[in-house]
Structure formats: C-alpha cells, structure tokens
Length: 270
Image (cartoon, rainbow, N blue to C red; front, side, top):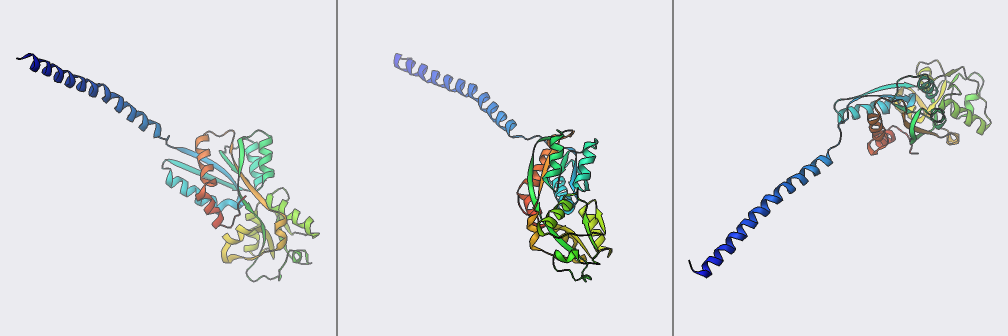
C-alpha cells in the first residue's frame, strides 16, 4: 500500500470509530432525559373517600358536583352531609369526621377558623339572597316583605343562628319590619318543607331553593333582599384524613365547572 493510501485509510477508520463512540455515549443520555421528563409529568392518582359537610342550601348543587367528581376520578367516593351551617359547626367541633366544610355564611366558617379547626384560609365560592316562597296558590296573597308581618299570616323562617335566619333578621332591621313566625327551623330546607306541605302561608328561603323546588312553590322576590347577601366559604377541615382529596374536591367546586353548576342553580359569584 502506498504511503498516501495508508494515511487516507487511517483517517477514515478514525472518523468511523469516533462516530460510533459518539453515538454510543449519546444514547443513554437521550433515553434518561426522556424517562425523567416522563416521570416529572405524572400526577399522583386520587383515591379514597372525602366527607363533605355542606350547608343545606347546597344540597342540589353539591350532589351534582360530587357525582361529577367521582366520574372524573375513578376510585374516589364523596360522602355528603347536609344540615344548617351552625349545626355542622357543632358537629365538627365535637369531633365529627369531616374533610371539607362549606358554609352558607362567613360567620360560621370563622367559628371553625378561630378554633383552629380548618386548614389554611377558606375560599369564598358563591353568594345567595333571600326570596319569599309561598304555595302555588299563594293563599295569603303575599306580594312583599311587609306582607309577611300582616296579622294571620303563617310565616316560617330559619332560626337566628342559621345563616338564612341571620339574613332574615338583617332584613327586618333594615326595613323596620317585625315578623312573628309560627316556627323557626334549623335549616332552610326545613322552611321550604313547611311551605310545600301547606303548613305555612310563606317561608323565607334562598333564591336557589325556590328555583330547585320548581312548581312546588311560587317565588316572591323583594327588593330589600339585597340588604343581606350571604357569602359561601369552603375549606379543608384540619383533622381531615385525606387532605389531598379534600383539596381536589374544593378545587372542583371553585373551578370553572363548579362555578357553572352553581350559577345555573341561581347562586351569585363572590
């Protein structure tokens, strides 16, 4: 072999050897980067049960939100407990196993916050106002808030410690009207029940309750309702055994889909 050909052969062989070595050293780096990237994008799968204590006025919306949440997160279960907000606070304070608390007012949420029984800060997710509910035939001919104070009118309201009762008191003071209810109930759904059963001529409930009741009642809006707008907060209970799932459910309630369900039901935005 001539000297020129020998040099050329060595140069080509060297180049091929370097290329193979480069490919071999580069392959693992590319593979490991891809694996790291893939691992970083994975999110932990939600599982288990989350117990939600929610104000009675949230029954229809939270039942739907819970069903939607379970459908989107197979392996999860949402257990719902509805009652007056003040009753729920009492239950949680006494050690009832709740993961999430949704109140119909900020006052009852503050009670849990002051007692150090919630995690972090509560998030406001909806607002609501009162409306008069009467039987479809409106036997007492109610057309205004003042009509509820007329002699002989059987009106039912929420107890003062319940958010809808506190709102009723606020409207009474703002309008100078004093009601004489035939009963004070522990939740807004109980007030609605008295009206739908014909035991009352009228009841003070929320706009959303009237909408949910459909043709079982007739709603009488009144301008003074804007004197008492209730804001609804939601938070993770400090003693929760499944805080990741609790936070995920709260995110569903406060997110765009949750807002749509609530708005469709008649709730306002905070």
